[in-house]
Image (cartoon, one colour):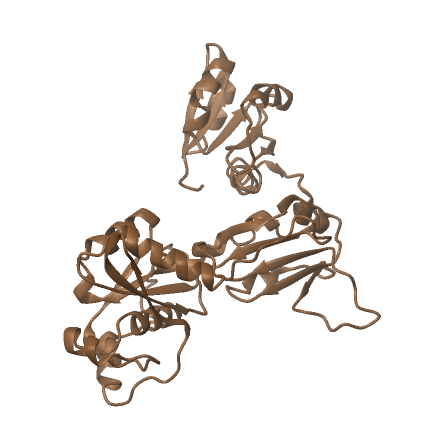
Amino acid sequence: MNDKSIAGIAVTPSGKSLLQRLSTVKIQSVNTDLKAHLAAIWSEYDSFVFCLATGAVVRLIAPLLQHKATDPAVVVVDEVGKFAISLCGGHLGGGDLLTREIAALLGAEAIITNASEGLNLPAIDILGKPFGWQRGTGDWNAVAGAIARQEPIQVIQEAGSTLWQTTLPPGHPFQFGFAEVRESTVTHKARVWISANQRRFSPDADTPKVQWHPRVLWVGIGCERGTSAQLIESAIQYFFRINHLAEVAIAGIATIDLKADEVGLLELCQKRNLPLRCYPADLLRSIAVPNPSSVVETEVGTPSVAEAAAILAARQQDEVIDWNVQSSAHSSDKETESNLLVTKQIFRQTDLPGAVTVAIAVSEQEFTARQGKLFLVGIGPG
């Protein structure tokens, strides 16, 4: 099962024995006031597995529920392990997935009752979760309702993996792109944007909309020594705002290796949990940029830091780069293809010392912040 914290609640010896078969579940065998005990530990776990009657669980958790975005997942199993029921937090809390895992471990039947599950359609509120996408604004309940009713749903996907589209069943309600306007054109009942752009939806619009933001934007940074994290963050916020980009679509920060110890950059990356990619001057110098600077080249050995670093980071996300090969191969033949979205801009504030140069590049492949493992198992010669 997943590595999130899971509490198992049992009130009988047989229930405790059943839950002990779920190796990652911390068993709470309760002999005291169960209601008070549950209230005391409710915020400490991501998921709860009850070996208890469903009605009793409903009455126990009802006073503790606050919002589906923050409530833990709740799964109920019967005393003999015949059924595993996803009761609460099925989508956002991961309850549906946990229910399937528990059912597989116990040899039980998974009971999942949400509409998207029955229709074999993706749940819109967790659609981008496997890809590391970030949820944006929108009327999520209204769009989910339209999908459940199988009404026409327009999907505009400008970024991120399209793998999810390949798993849709025949007759699904999603229609991709902008349809040509003709008399027979179907009127969409909802719209889904998948983009790095930040769109503002009118609450009075007839068509409900939501937006997912794949993490595809790499921010190249150049700055004076000693520039504060506050100034760097203000610069990023300003240029994202005026270019209508979503800050949650940031994949990471990129700069020259001379700035690998820049305190302001390190503080910002730590605060936002962003990776910092640092490149040597000779590699940055191999990248063709629209705004090279002879002054910058004199100071750090490359005519571009922000633009070149952003381009490199975005490109590195799309393919594995051998720095040595790349550097020697392009020292006399610079790359001309550019994924630069916003050319370098300089930002200052009168009340803060320092200066920041910002450039933004977009990668085709989203950054998920996850690392996989590959196990090679030998089976002998031949």
